[in-house]
Image (cartoon, rainbow over all chains, first blue to last red; front, side, top):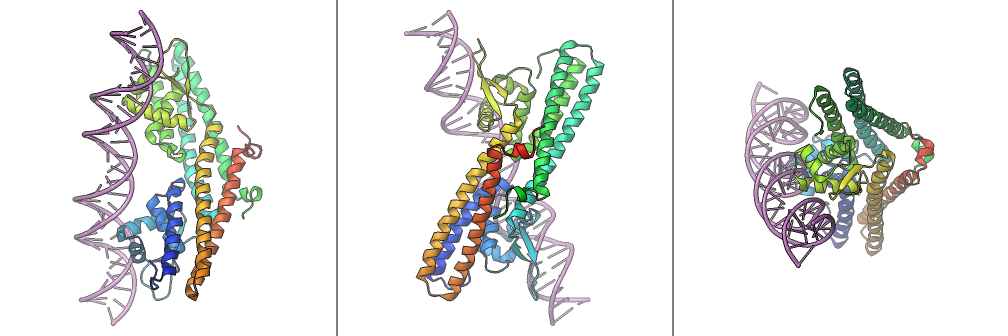
Length: 181
Length: 181
DNA sequence: ACATTTGTACAGTAAAAACTGTACAATCCA
DNA sequence: TGGATTGTACAGTTTTTACTGTACAAATGT
C-alpha cells in the first residue's frame, strides 16, 4: 500500500490505518455509503498523495471497474474530489476534508428529496380523498376517509417540521447553535 | 385488504392508500427500514384496527414469517407497538404515531452508536501512533505519523460536533428551536 | 392433561446487490 | 493520422440479502 520499504514502522502504520479505516467504513452506511466505498474513502483519506484508479485498485486488491464506480459515488456524495496535476494523464482523486460540509450536503440532499416526495404524495392522496368524500353517501366510508385525512395532515405537519430541521443545516444556522470544533 | 364490500368507493380508498404507502415505503431507507417493512408500516398505519400477523400476511400477500420479522424490526425501531385487547389471543400491533419521537429515537440510536465506535477507533489509532512515533528515527515515517495524527484529531473534533448535534435531538432541545407543527 | 392455536427458529430458495473482466469510446501523444 | 493509454458500459458471476415453508415450542382453552 505504501511505496516505502516495508520496515516494521511502516507496516505498523499501515496496520493502524487499516484498523481505523475498517471501523469508519462500517459506519458509513449512515451516509448511504457502502462499506466497500467507505474503505475506499478511508484509503484515499490516508494516502500521502492524490490517488489514481490504479493506485486504489492495487491498494484494495479490487478491480479498476469497482474503483471507478466507487469513486463516482463518493464524488457524487461530495466526499471525494478530482484534482488536476501537471503532467499526469490519469485522473487523480483526493478526499474533500471538510466533513462538516460533506455531512450537511449528504444529509440535506437525501432527506430533502424524500420529504418533498412524501409531502407531494400526501397532498395527492388528500385531494383524492376529498373527491371520494363528495362522491359517496356510505357513512362508514366517509368515517374512514375522515380518519385518513387526519393521518395525512399529521404527516404533512411532520414533514414540514423535518423540512425546517433540514433548512437549519442547509443554511448553516446549525453552526451557530452547535459551533464547529 | 378491507373487510367491507368492494364497492367502488372502498376500492378507490384502498388504491389511494396504497399509492401513498408505496411512496413513503420507498423513502424509509433513510430510517434504516427496508421498503418491504415500510409497506408493512404503512399498512398498519392505515388499518382501521390493530392488526394480527395473519391480517398483515393477507394484506401484503406475504408469509407470516416475514410479517413476524418485519414487525419485530419495526418494533425495535419504535415505530410499531404491540397492544393488548380483551379476548384476543393473537398478538395485535399498531403504529406508534408520534413521528417526532420515532424520528428522534431512530436518529439518535443509530448515529450515537456509530460516532462512539468511530471516536474510540480514532483514540486507539492515536495512541498507536504515539508509540510508533517514539520508536522510530526514520524522518519520512515520523512526518507521515504526524500527518495521520492531525487527521485523526480533526476526525475526533468532527465526531464531537456530531455528538452535540445528536444531543440536541436527544434532549428535545431541537423542539425549542424548531417547534413541532 | 390434552388438543389447538400462535409466533418464531431454522434451513432452503429466490431475488438483489456487489464485483469482475472484456470490450470499446474518448483522450492523449508522437 | 495512428498507436497507446485511460475510464467506463455492459454482461456475466459471485456474494449477500430477502423471503418462504416446515417444524416446533410456548401459550391457551377445555
